[in-house]
Length: 75
Image (cartoon, rainbow, N blue to C red):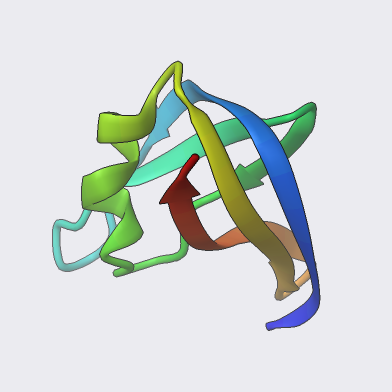
């Protein structure tokens, strides 16, 4: 992952994307006006629903030219 930046703001789930080949969930998210998605087969796909509508601190990087969620922590 490249170009990792840190953002603090309210997490909003925009939509649920298709699951990965192995059945793990994926989401399209908005954090402080930045749009990103969860990585394929990432554990963050399971925990991101717990933070919907809450203040979070997240790191977002680029992975294959897509903004991708790297870490997520509640404030």
